[in-house]
Length: 429
RNA sequence: GUGGUCGUAGCUCAAUGGUAGAGCUCCAGAUUGUGAUUCUGGUUGUUGCGGGUUCGAGCCCCGUCGAUCACCCCA
Image (cartoon, rainbow, N blue to C red; front, top):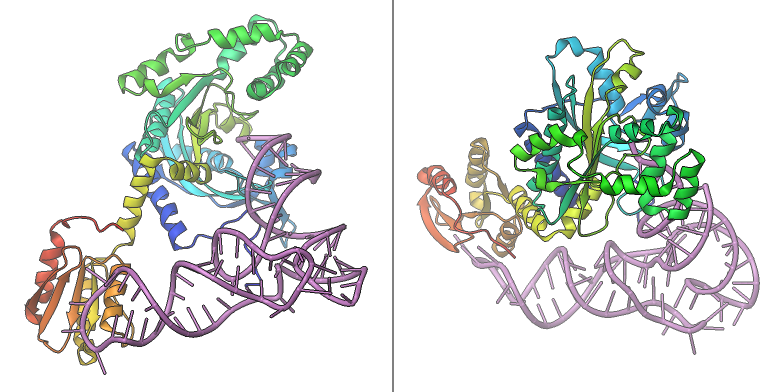
């Protein structure tokens, strides 16, 4: 038994886990690129002040923070948006607007682990900076939908819950509620679906509002509300509006959001939100003390909840299995049936690898049966047998279970021609 | 940070307070040039860790670490 254990809330990625992780990364990347986003990355470690600046002192309780040897206060990043704001504002003159940037990397939060929540998790972040239009919001929402679909999730599996903080700002202004109550109010709304109505009513009355008024407003806020008009038009034109459900209770915590806010929710399993985001037009100005005022919007999707959802959704499972098989299978396995031929076998191994094929072999003298077992295990398409009949070489198609003898001189050409054709079927179970 | 449940072989789990086991996996052989099945044999444990009670603790008690669930929080 090993003496050392994985640090609480952190995960090991054994090959089978890493394969799933890479499938998720590949999917995120390919869809983001399809949308014209470019990849960036920031440091995993930042000055603690960067996060304080954005979220205030109270968040330090949830930070992995420490002092380095020079007594600098540092924190593992709990999110990438502050780093993004720092990077984008620092060199915003170098890039034409709008910036469409995405990133994939680990984030860290010092919290109690439980289902869907670990202390290190990997996020996909997509942001558009320098464009304040609802068209940019629509682009992000469309991206989040297409990412979900790329994982094999269907309309019955997930929905986008959409709102806009402006509708609440207007609601409060219409009732002459002081601006200082806004964040308190939004916190109440955020929790309204999981708090007892009596408790909510008490809290609302404290800032001069009635529960009935708020509820009635929520119930009558639908997709005909003018705040959604442009966004709706842009998504309808793309044929994606049917993925949207207006839900005024979505306000996304007490974050920096200023307009559109949305979450990707699964419909079948009652999980946490798979992704969330929105518009945060004031953040760049805040982070630069007003010197760079750049509108922005974005969303983040974590790997943990997404992974749970993919495992629980049959359609996504199939895609995942297919991708894992494609990633792990090899083109050929070289069987050395006669040790005297190992030199010729290794020369062929090298030539095939040089040509870009995925080829493996066993290291030392092993029974032929074991070598075929290993080839099977590796999901090889071909077995290439070097034995006493050399210079004739046996090439066996492990899927069709047929084999031919090929002269050594023609071997490489024969194998490349065979691999160039589509396999007859995928070897399953 | 708070509370509930749990922790035995690589995995899934047994074992009235009385000698720590099974299945699967893995490795080898049956089978010295062909993938499956079957059969045979074999490796693996300070029972998470540390104390305490007891003639005797995997089992009871305390602490601790971890997992899990629910709070808190969710940027």
